Length: 208
Image (cartoon, rainbow, N blue to C red):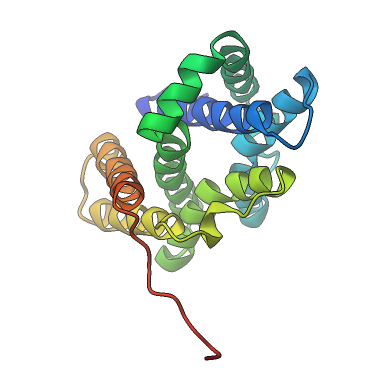
């Protein structure tokens, strides 16, 4: 098993996505959630995008079945939510911390995995984006919320920008670890700026 820098960053991304999903379930006003449903929402948020990516690539067994450390990372995220709900909620609300870090990490690692499977650049960028956003789409659907990709602020576009940047730097033979950090940071920065200043892409109006 590859215990490299990117491997541990990937586990961190899984953990923060699990925290994001579990917090969403714990705080939802319209539903009562027991421990299992909170854990399940965190679990599906953490593995949703990566599972779709692996299925698309024919990468079997999918990552969380192949590597038990992924399940441990999800469990740690869930445990932190149960033990420190107020602290984690404050960090999320003030810093957009967990979902934003998660999409940054997942975008880059998803793109890298696609490239390692010999996928063309365009498809690799899309798979990087899908890896980052699909778990959140499932989470929001379960919570009966409008998924982030359909809201005004830039979300999926930030992931796509990070994917493209990772591919460009990879072509330029930039060190893979530095590439990971730089590209993920760009995704996070775009997302934070978009939320802070309420930025979004122009709307398409078909009927007026």
